[in-house]
Length: 58
Image 1 (tube, rainbow, N blue to C red):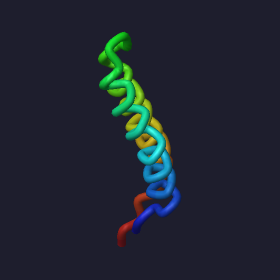
Image 2 (cartoon, helix red, strand yellow):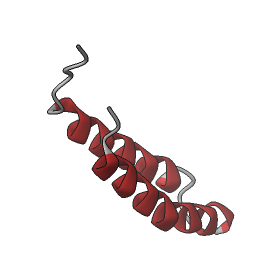
Image 3 (cartoon, rainbow, N blue to C red):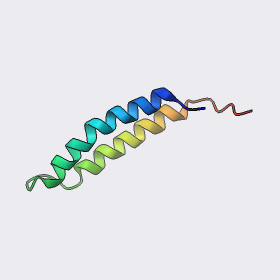
Image 4 (spheres, rainbow, N blue to C red):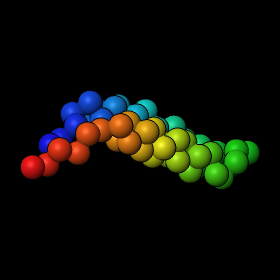
């Protein structure tokens, strides 16, 4: 069963994070790891949302 709330949150976060990550990546003064930290936070949030999901596939 597909969790539509999780998919909607991930699409929203992706639409916010991708432009920021590309802007941060080409910035000469910035830290190179900032986009990776943001993506790690997105992945962790998806894990937290999926952790409590009931897997009833009978």
